Image (cartoon, rainbow, N blue to C red; front, side, top):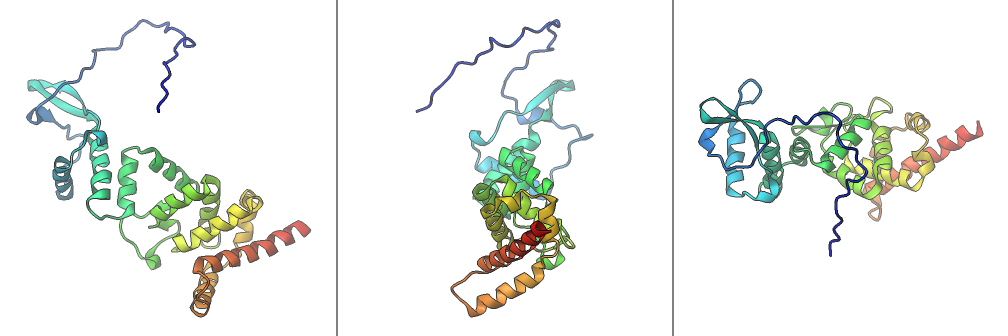
Length: 259
């Protein structure tokens, strides 16, 4: 059962400047024919956008939207000044995520545009690790440093391991060697998270961790894991990658300490 608490404003000071807050806003129903957009900053709706508008109308729910903010203009019309893109983004994430099968990248960018808190947190994590989510489909061979399609996998890793572990794991890929393009994939990121989560001293060693991982060959480790996986069915590729990373860091970190 929910517990409600009154809003306490006793500790706030009263304003010292004269009150001048402009015209009071109000909520009202406005016919669509009276709504206009300012072309100096509003873009034309594309064909794909038109399809989404139809889907919004078909599957509309108030829980996914908030009122659009408008301002009166000439001729008894109202110009949309805020809320249009937010409403479209929320609808795209809700409708395409649940009705039409689309990529996790599209849903991520839609939620980010709609200022979804989880998407914004994800964006901060990706920025810290210099990772970019591809907007379109890209093969592993064509990816550049820091690019990934695996936004869904990263989201699951965040929920499982937390910010510090995921950021460090991603940095081990993007900020070592040549940036290891194409290796920001679930089967590499997850074992890295497992190893660093089990060894917080490694995870929290910052630049030292990256220096030692700089000599870790992801291509060699991947090829070896895939080959061994074919002959030993009881293990997974992720387990073998985790073992390779653990062995590498155990040796590297001990040598550093000895020095």
